[in-house]
Each structure stands twice: as structure tokens, then as C-alpha cells.
Length: 118
Image 1 (cartoon, one colour):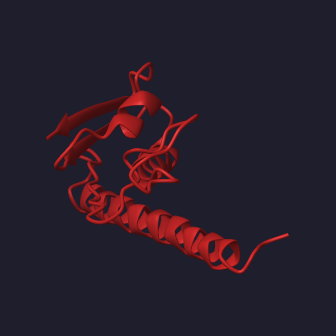
Image 2: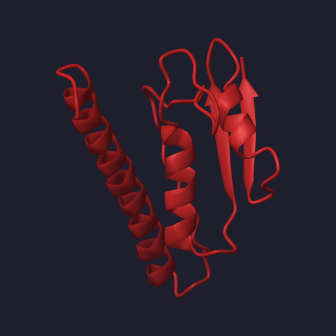
């Protein structure tokens, strides 16, 4: 059962997830097109920027700073799914304070490099 406050929030979170997935798919598609045009001489390299509410304080077991879902982490995983299991992703978090949730989520995952500049 959803309260009047929770129902719109859940719908917004669904839309946020869909937007992240679509944006990552377009970034990867653009990189694949470049790879095809260069006959594979240029490896796939995709970039995606989340410029608002990246959710960098949300972790597995905590949240803070109004971050309930970590969109930066979702984008990283979506990119890895689209590029293949052996792909590596870098997250550069530039903010007034540390992106502790993103760092905690990937602390033991060598396939995702997280740097937080604050």
C-alpha cells in the first residue's frame, strides 16, 4: 500500500531508472558506431555524465543527503552489462563533499574505479 507521498516518489524513481538506462544505451551505441566506422581500430569507449542527483550517498545499507537510490552506481552497472562482463568503468564524483555511498558500493569491486573530488 502506498501513501500519497510514496506513490509519486516511486513513479519518479521508475522514471529516473529508465532515463539512466536509456542514456547509457545511447552512449554505448555511439561508441559502437565509432568502432564500426573505424573497422575496430578504435576500441569501445563510452562516457555518460549524471549532472543532477547522482545518489552518491546511497549505499547497500544506508542513505543520506536525500540520496535513496544511487544512479551513478546504476549507470555503471548498466554500462558494464551493455559493454560486456570484462568491461571496466570509472566514476568521477565532483561535489562539495565525498560520494561515500558510491565509494562503499564499489570498494571491493576492481571493475569499477571511484574517485571523489571534494
